[in-house]
Amino acid sequence: MTPEGWFSVALVFCRISGLLYGLPVFNTVGVPKHVSVIASLVLTILIAPTVPVVDDPLTLGVIVLGFGGELILGWVLSLTVRTIFSVMAVAAEIVSRQTAMGMAMFMDPVQKIQQSPLGVLSSWMAGLAFLSMGLHLTFIEGIAYSFQWVPPGSTGLVGPTAPILLEACRVAILVGFQLSGPLLALVMLVNSFIGIMAKLAPKMNMFFSVGMTLNSVVGILVFGLALPWMLEIHSGHMVGSIDLFFQILQVMD
Image (cartoon, rainbow, N blue to C red; front, side):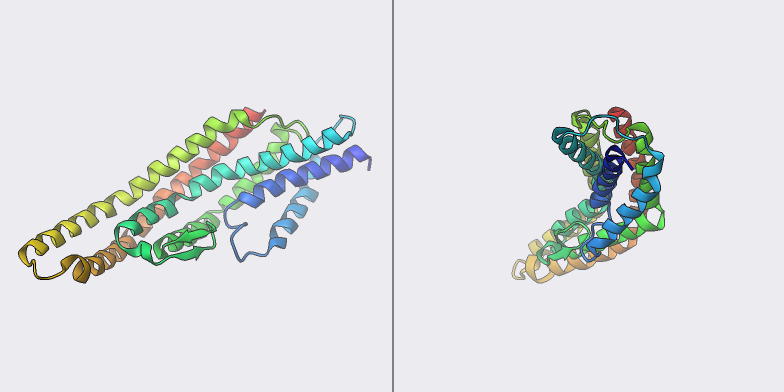
C-alpha cells in the first residue's frame, strides 16, 4: 500500500475514534479503554477499503491538520448525541435538588461527574435504553456513511456546526425542565402542606423533622412512577438526535 493509502486508513481511524470517545456507554467509567480502541480498529478495517485515497502530497502540515480535523469531526458528531443523552440526568438532578436528595452525591460513571442517586440511576437507565434501542449501532452506521459525505482528508472548519450544537443544548435544557416539571409541581404542593402544618403547630420543627423526610420519600415514589414515561420521552429525543447527527454532515459537506 502507498503512503497515501496508509494515511487514508489513519484518517478513518481518527474519525471513528473521535466518535467512540464521546459516544454514550463507550466512554463510561469502568468500560475498559481497549474496548473503544479495538472497536475503532475493527471498524477501520471494514470501512477503510471503501473510502477514496487522499490525493494531496504528504507534508507535515497536511498530516497534522488531517488527523486533527478528523478527530474533531468525530468528537463533534458524538457531542450532539451526548448532549441529548444528558436530558435524563438534567431532569433527575433538578428533582434531586428540590427533594433533599442532592445532599447524597455519588460518582456517575456515565456522565463522569458527581451526581445525586436519582441522577446516577437516570444515567444508567438512559444508557440501557440507548443500547436496547440499538442507537449505538445506528450512530456507528452513520459514521460509516459520513465518509461518503465527507471523504477523509477533506474535513474543513467545524465552525458552521455551532448552531446545531447550540440547538442540541437548547433541546437538552428545555426537555430536562419539562421532564422534571410534574415532579417539581408535586414537591411544591408538599412544601405548601408542610408550610401550613408549620403554621398550625409552630412548636414543632416541621421543615427539618418532617419536611426533608417527606420530600425525599414522595420524590422517590413519584420519580419511580414517572420513570417509564421519562424514559419514553427521552428515547424519542434520542432518536431525534439522529437528525442533528446528519445535519452536521450536511453542513460539513
